[in-house]
Image (cartoon, rainbow over all chains, first blue to last red; front, side, top):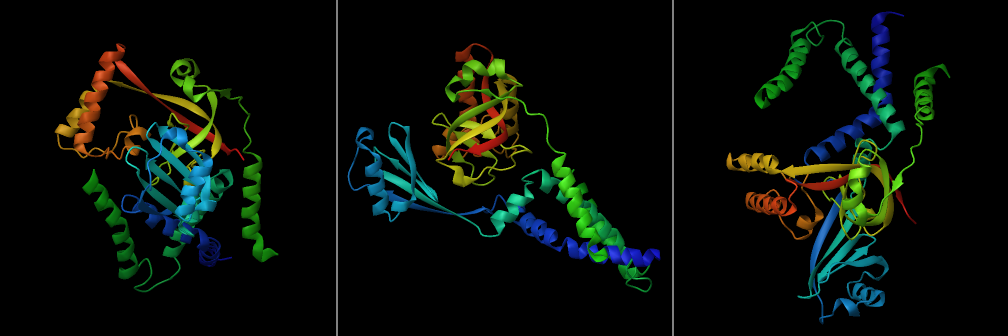
Length: 185
Length: 178
């Protein structure tokens, strides 16, 4: 088999095989790049709440907490409750939590929902286990092969690696990260 | 069949790698959260296991978890890369290695210098606790950080050891108790 034919076959087949991985890393990469600007894993909403009447820590039972959640349309969400301090009640929900200051009667309800797809992609991006570690290592090697073989798909002309466009684009693609590196160090 | 040689080969390598990843199991020493300050010095470098309710999981990164009513800090590692927010309120067993961060006058002086030089200092992982977060303190704010520095200085003087220790656990595994 000719070298160029092998090159093209590798580029094509590895491209197909790792199409899914490229999507996972590209999408989660953008999501995690902007970690400071948003929460890529969860949709979190906060609501202020006020108790109708004051209650002391000693008077609070599980039934009282469940009744409070019923008022908030969250009856089935009860998971557990505890007191982080004498004046604070924290209720864990299946999808969020409620924290109430018992002295002021004011509190915050936080509802949490997983972002569909993004949550799972980000979970994989963070390398959840041994099998994924090896698979993603293989993906990285394949990405190298896809990149290098991509340079030699076109034999000649302006779009080939020997042409002004192919060579020019490749050089620009290497120069941009180099310039950014020099800017940061 | 020949056409699927590459995916089959890949799958075989994965199975092989998984079967060979088993390492010798180290017995973890059980540790109560309330005993940490007393027992931590003798358990440094040893695998310990702790049980407790997940009081909080860091929303943004998922890299920190606070365990029990004492809100003891557990950190994500390569073996447990992130913690799930849905674990909040659940009882878990976490194994890992204790980590001690000693905060002394040199540490505080460097921190203070960074702030005075105008550097934007993100919250210090070594001293970050759930206490500050639950009080709604913005630990990246300069005024909060100066207050923290002054507070730690007082604690160092009061302790008489010349430093204060912040303990955390670097997680090796986590099991949710059903």
